[in-house]
Length: 289
View (cartoon, rainbow, N blue to C red):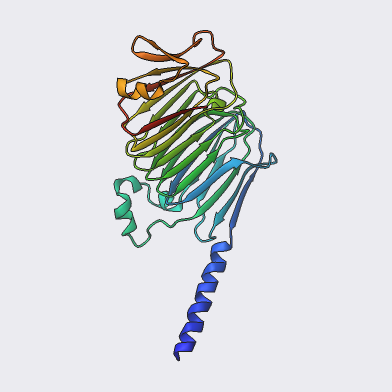
């Protein structure tokens, strides 16, 4: 075959691969009666977007390319369970025995896919999610979020509550080593407790949003590679931790109370945020809004 023939064949193959990458598998589950939902997600190398969808569908999911669809399981009961698992995880129950690099050497190594997940639970929802590499954008806006347990290794994670959580968030736990983590509008989550373990990751944490009546406690464990914080002056703030870290929060409206820094009028504030740091964070930048 001539060089021109090879070029045309290569071009045709590339075009077919491009078209295949644009074709999406569609997975949907109609809305069914339930009181609460437990949502479980396990992903390897995938780029995930999750947000509220059509109320008539509990789940509407697009997967690109339409190659290997994730395993989706739903248990319909009062305390319903919806589970989405990477096909590799489903086929390899002992996947965690291997490192990511070792899995990449296997003949059936995990593929990168685009998962668009539109979720519309009928009641309070508990989220348990595991991601390895890839990206995860989790927009909890307009969802009744009762708890979040997120583990993401080497992953770019973006969390948002653009509007106020309709219910109180009992617990938000995120373990994101050697990746990146962004949390937007933290006040809107209405969280009792937030625990972040972010060793070696970059972090952006926004203490902003609509005030609620009560108190949120945020604990920062591990040492991020770099951390940016945006904090509202409109709420009561108490900062606890190593002296060098607390000093980054010094501002005209902040006063010393023992070893802590506390905003003026904290005790009487409608909405109070307690920030506790377990270790000094050398690269910490704080901005007040």
